[in-house]
Image 1 (cartoon, chains in turn blue, yellow):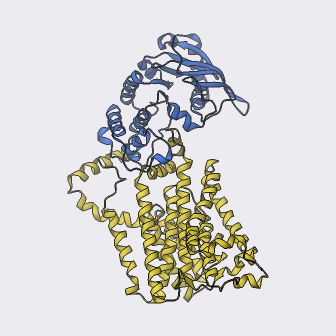
Image 2 (cartoon, rainbow over the protein chains, first blue to last red):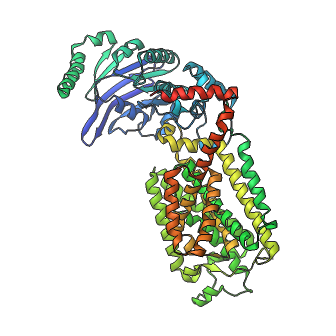
Image 3 (spheres, rainbow over the protein chains, first blue to last red):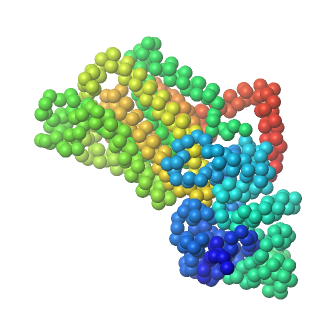
Length: 254
Length: 369
């Protein structure tokens, strides 16, 4: 059996007494995709935040490629090979599509290595490759601020790709997208999973189904179920937490 | 296709021409006005530093007077010492009963060491401060407050240590630098040319830095610090870098200004002058290096002519100008000039096929939510 790429061990995160994550253990193996679903407040985003160092664990460990990254500064975790796409598109609005990717693609991320004007040939080639992969080659000179919402999402996925991270974390990559854009994103992520290890958070069931990847269901900061989406869809417990939420929302609305 | 970091060489043309025209000012300006321009261009060097930190780096520095003062005092100490006969102490030390030259004054007997100190001392001070605040991830508001407090503390310190700093009056009555008499007309011309030269070099250096990847990252950190961090960069070094450069620019400005005006005193390094410096840059346009320089010269020309007519009106007027500029054109005079030029260029651009095909989808894109 191969070593897991990401090994989350008995993770706890508490905010002012609120247990956002209450003992999650999770193993992700190289070159696999994993979808994490769960209702709002289940701890999905907090889990990714903790892996990437934005939130610190109160207990437990995050081990990446055999290295304990739980207490590393954020940029060192990223340099170790994890890259995260946030829920709201985090592109650099005042820069062009090409410049955004150029910042992401650089291999040496130490500040003293940046007193050059151009990327090296390999980095340039990689930017061109990513532009094709996300289908935005003809948009390269456009300011990121001028892009449509869906395009910003793709650009940010492109930045994560350009960084050549081994582990790619995507937080609701289809939020705010039209059905056609969602389809295109699902195809993009499936291609991604051939070269990277991908963890996707979402609660759009139709989208999750298209990803055809094993699913972990989180609920109240714990792992509730694990399996494939077809089985989980019919699972009474999963239905209960999703329907329960729907019922509550109905009550709140009326 | 070409990323905008390679800005057209045309954008260098106007600044380069202006630097050359002003460098020849001794041929067409009266000595009094020459002196003023020299002083204001010196201040403009400091303003370009603020433009780097604030406009491009997104951190508001409210204490640039400190670095200005460090550069100014470093040179003034030498000027003070070189004017003395051997073994004698500067006048203010004698008045205050100081009997021996303080140890930290000794290196400034050497002109070269003093000139080096105008760069090195502000650089080290800026590095230490920037290291402390940016490593701790302080936000812009706190940095503004801390730098402001520092300006207050520095001015207070200078005033309180009268025996070794000249106190409230500062250091004045200079005579020669590198053996050349400062009152001499030839020296004045040289001083003017050197000032314009330093300003042009500082400008070219800052522009070139902006074109490198490091310069792009400074702006990237301003616009999305977290995004940059989660792409694997540590944001602090880029902020520290521009802060140190701004400190050096301020130090050079302080030294040159001291030479032109013949005095450096706490009145030029404290809270009020530090805020005024930011206003010059806001008026000129904080994201534009050249705008900051022009803004500084214009505001100071206005200050000089208005405060000599109505001494009390200037502060009110400057406040009014500041508010007016911020409301009417938030990107300052440079921003106003840019949008005016863009409007002039637009009819011509539509005839060029390359611009036309980029311009059209922009309109479409803007309507997409």
